[in-house]
Length: 576
Image 1: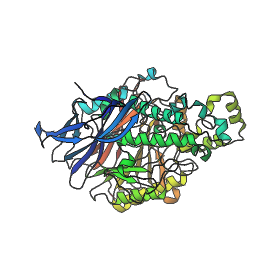
Image 2 (image 1 turned 90 degrees about the vertical axis):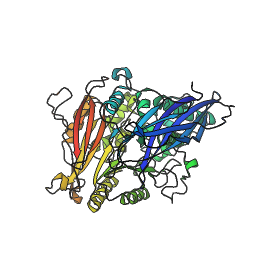
Image 3 (image 1 turned 60 degrees about the horizontal axis):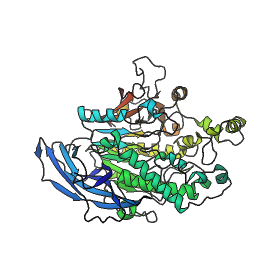
Image 4 (image 1 turned 135 degrees about the vertical axis):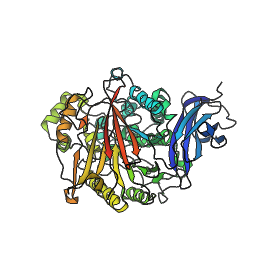
């Protein structure tokens, strides 16, 4: 019988593989104790790697490192324990069985052969918006169960890539201690409602309980115990639209506290990190990685939070790597990342082994998506009579933070928004330049928009994709849990997606959307071929014979059914 009361876990997190062929990962559990209880010794993780039912090394143990302690308002202490896992990779795949002694059941995860490229799953938006009828969609588990069945019955996944909004924190505004602080009139007038001790405790309580509910139960918790996570945050991991509001709101005590604590809990639960313990400082970012996390890339200081950008470059095999770019820590209305962050990531990319042929760049928000600039301009106007009339008649049309139109923060978040378009174009140009110089195919993957699809960039010259260093897929997989937009919105997006864009014409680059959806979920012929409005997740597999990555978008056929139809798109070999 367990002697440790476990709140959350075990959870797994993949780090990378080093030059000596050592696979690095971490496990995390959160245990509950009485406030005055003395913990005599830390918990112990025991693990053993096998291949063909034979141990490939003696059983190993790792002592839990106390990351942080959350003391709640009921005089309970909740201790975060991190465990280090190291496996020497072999010429054959291995299965690693592990348990935290007297705390968790026996679980296992898969480590590929050293020369094998990882098979991985990608997802985003693993929670419901407050307006969604969750029963209509069968709750959060249907597509997570599909992912687990694919992992067990087909081929195992080696990592689980969370592309943002792994939790939804928007309901923090409903906490009784915070309701009075969310006053749009006071915020618009420049009043700064100071966060009281009571409100600060409520913010920590919300984030802890929200993670405990989302990460501590259900099909996601089962998946995260069997497939090591690689995560990057987006706005809902903090609060809806964080970084995309005016300075008057973003610099308020309330949003500063929510963003700071949200990022702190994101690091704890999703990255298994505590910056203070791991030697990372927002005041001193001269060292790109002072921690034991080998994949970490520290960028410039945060914009509205006391944390620098935390990006990651992970090894997914000798020919495949993934860059997860932190697009939230430094986000402002006119900025996504600082130049220091881009430079640090570029340095890490240049240091990749020469064997790498594919680099997947994870961005929370799609870098190629149907333009809605006309809507952005209309909703942002203070003098538009239609918008002002709707605001007066429909209070739900505006958000609870500063009275802006509810949709405006989503539009301002997009890479093609007025304040981000030039930065976006520079990023595309720089990745294409990197591709040309290093003969590496770059593909983007994103979430956020609660719909599936795939944009692409390509040369204005008539070049075959495999010979075109400017050919970049921009896959969108969203959402694995949340509801899709209404059919009318999907219809508009498909109409806009048919247009070709000239924003990169000066760089001899064209952009469009791939017609992935020639046939619908019931095999009917579709007119709307570019964007699909249904829950989905992505499986990615490296084709060793062709040096291609095949992305499989698994789309739910009916609400809450968990039954899927697969759509495929391929990132070609870099033959340039």
